[in-house]
Length: 501
Image (tube, rainbow, N blue to C red; front, side, top):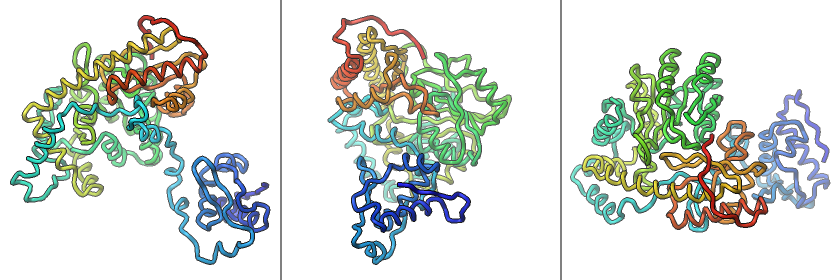
């Protein structure tokens, strides 16, 4: 199919493409059922962006001339004998053309894997989801019912836009135990880390702005910056966290809007930013007046060694915005996070909350406040630590046994992720696909790199969600997948995997 486009014409290129395809359908060159090239292939053929072809195909679908189905691509859907029927009933809205291009071109592979993570059919070692069953269901039902029946609820089941005041009072005490001083007015309660990051990006990032992050980095971070029209620049890491020499040089050269750091048990590597580097980050922030957003959700999940002092606890000038999430230490499905920052930031976040949310989740906030007050949260936090420690040790023991196959990893002293390097020559995307077919979900490493070209020999293993029995099954699947890709028979058990990043 020979199609020519002229970028000098006033007619948009996507309309030139759609009209050219229509002519070939009407002429019979493309009869009913003909298969069109994929969006990516057509874009390469014509030397245009993929979004341009997406819009063109969207026009044809809206006119009833194309049919699309996942896995089958695009096929001609109009019989040659009835071309007039296409326009007889009017035209549909081309919704693809209405959507901003940057929203059409996002890679959904990460989301697809996350959606598939929760189910009995496969062992989920991908998504970071809290363990079920740590909080007793009968007690949760009792406490929730009791909250619903209190006299205060006759005013309605809602909370202020900053979050429930009682909860924020308890969070002041919670933060003080981490060395962070904050007032009730300096805390904004939200649903989850992703919402907090999204709101902060909306507040701070303008099109063309640069944001610095560690690399590798969670896709949840770099995608929201890109959607806001900003660009993300990665800063390399080693076993002690972000490279501060490179960081300072990039701050000088790129004048970033902010630096985003996952400081404790980093996603995906499990690394803790070393104390001396925490001090250096604060020095860089203060010297160059660059804000720091610190995401610290896993800092309470320490299994070996001393606790961790957040960057925010070292912040004397108010340059650090602190995000904490209860996603790994509270009831699964009851999402709760908060931001601690100066009053100007919190007031702006509250305004965004008022615009985007009719009311924050009232019952989750009330329940969290009660459990922080009576000590239940801290007792259950200990139970989560014990549970996750056992499961970390289980996964590490199984990875040690794969050392003769070439597997390498660094055992984290907390958190819920293990960053694992596969033997040379094995692509992690292929490995993840094979493991998924075998019944286990892991995330391939390239998803955590901005270019998608690095990390091809790494996988991220999560151990928080599944039971120990199902984790054993999942590790069986990973080992079997590795042996099949290497075509290696069973080998004896081996020793400790070496440290690396």
